Length: 201
Image 1 (cartoon, one colour):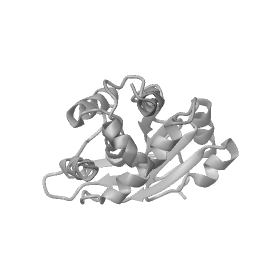
Image 2 (image 1 turned 30 degrees about the vertical axis):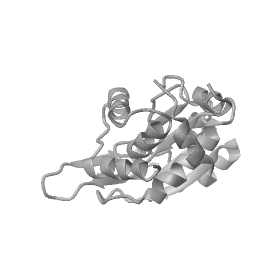
Image 3 (image 1 turned 90 degrees about the vertical axis):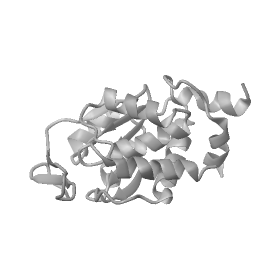
Image 4 (image 1 turned 135 degrees about the vertical axis):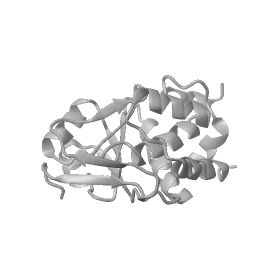
């Protein structure tokens, strides 16, 4: 195993393999009440109502990578910090976590994404994956990827990350669905991830 592989491998303790070819690429108000909705287009799709809740909604995919719903409040951010999270990828277009995270010294990438069931550009995944890989290169770090409900956007980004870390697309989808039952990996989002990965060469 090369030095580069041994340096990246621990970032995903349950990873079945490393993918050193992509690591070279990696180098180069809302209040606590109310209601949001992540909505699909009307034809043939369901509507998911997302209620603000008390407490955090986090699902650990691995020992260092979690996905879930919005943080929204200082109490929830404190819970995230207590869980050992050191880095956050915030996929919400609705809310920037940065001010809530600052008192806990948690680094945030606000990567605002509309849950509009439209194809997503490779640059969206590139920002998230570069941030995540740099974060997971730090000993003891933990990453939380979230959107409003943890149903569409956060799992989509987690899928891209897992694949860059060595998982096959289908295996990563199975892991995410098994660990977090509410996930809906819509075809348009999976195809966006697939195109991103294809662009890595």
